[in-house]
Length: 233
Image (tube, rainbow, N blue to C red; front, side, top):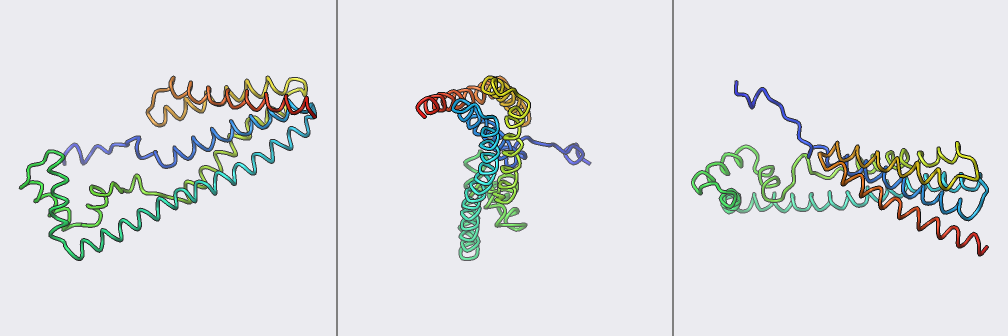
């Protein structure tokens, strides 16, 4: 048996579907909930009001993330199905043209024309639609849209992320809510950025700095608005 048959590789791109939804959900959960908490805390010293606002933000945000991801990824899935249906019809109506089309793709990648025709013919003999979906349309098992998975992953990860700044509200003294929640949330964001980067094989420092910067900016803006409106009211 060849080494290729014995060596099963695990590529990072296989994680792209759930990883994107999980990182986006948790990041949004931390940033939006922490920003909401900081904004309300800057406007009112009442810790119960801050906690209620944070819980409401968690529930609303989780539902919004789930609905948004489901609608977005469902649209992608609908487009994929439409493209596959059209490709299926083209394969039925003109298989010879589709063979040449697939072979031409391989030629552009550097395969000589006779070999490209041979490869295209063998692939189409086994599963013509899968061959065209992968090489012509760019649709594969790894990248195909999964609306339910994306929605559930986003909602769950948002809830986990939002629970972190909420926990800080519970354990922090009322007079120090803003600095404690802000500092802890930035720490959570830095950790999330590092974990997401490691899981996806990206640069850890760059990912951590990026997510921390935008989180700090969001909390600073909402704190300023909360302070302004709290003073006016």
